[in-house]
Length: 164
Image 1 (tube, one colour):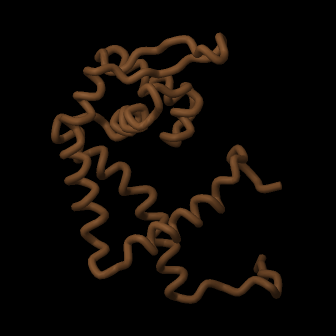
Image 2: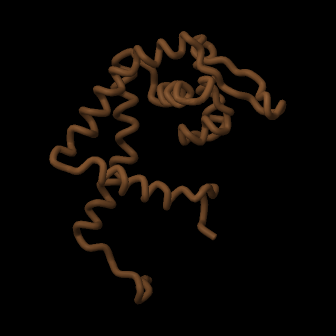
């Protein structure tokens, strides 16, 4: 069975197809490569690093668990497991939300902030080597704006699934 696209859809040209395929490959492989670099360097896994990073940037170095999960692009259960590991190391603690007694906040401890600072060079080196160093001669501000538009378009605050 052959599917013919509607008249208003035009097929991707070779350059467009190459960009889409390369992007999918990067989206899949880059986080894993950075995670591997950091773990091999005896630093934090990427998910834990990102959780500490977002907490360090939040007011009072704390965030609701659901907000932290969204910022890290993890499920709430995935974030709960990540925070449990960090809590076991004394890098974060959980406290009841003052705004909603049913909710929990993750709070970055001083030890967690120190661990983030210790891990930062490993993260930076990996991000530069595996990603940024490949963009020589490219306008990074323009690239960042384009990627931000793509991300905004893809993230309408809807749960994953079929568009309405």
